[in-house]
Image (cartoon, rainbow, N blue to C red):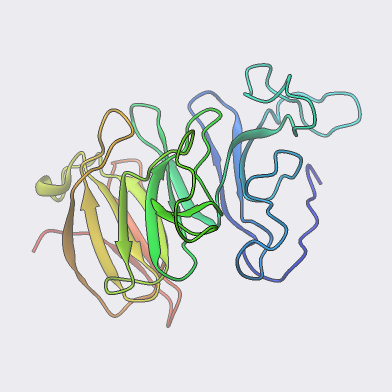
Length: 241
């Protein structure tokens, strides 16, 4: 056992484990569950819930089965957990690294908005002050200073639970090479997104709706993208029509 985190409710556990290009392990944890983040874990730097963590599993600090990287953003912040890389997440469901090094995540919303966001060093993604780029608590006139906007969001008319994906680096579907492909678990929709170099809004291209519950994506050694179906099961490769 490397790390254990108490989970107060049976949902919003988390959504993946990813080693970054820096060799560190990134761990995305949900806000602990229920609805409306009742314990305000997302904004509490003293809690590991509602966060993206970054740890070094090649070394061990005294009393831990891992080490804290010295360049983590809150190592010297009083009362903050030093494992935290970014905070203000609700339920980071699948995330991956852009070939240029940026961590890109799908963060599942509460009732109205789903988002794709960059997860940078020390970033505050906003939950539960905001759901995506919209006020949540309070519902109006919430603060925006210091909160990172998503690079893409969609409402309940388009989907109900975002599943983060990968940048296509292969050439099997030339029109998608270099694009970030992601989907929606509840509706079977797929999109591609031209990721910006900086955290700013991007335009997505709708790729279609399929009879699958997209629970995760993968990228093979050739850079081609695969999607997994949580319903009847199956792994599907993206191909050109």
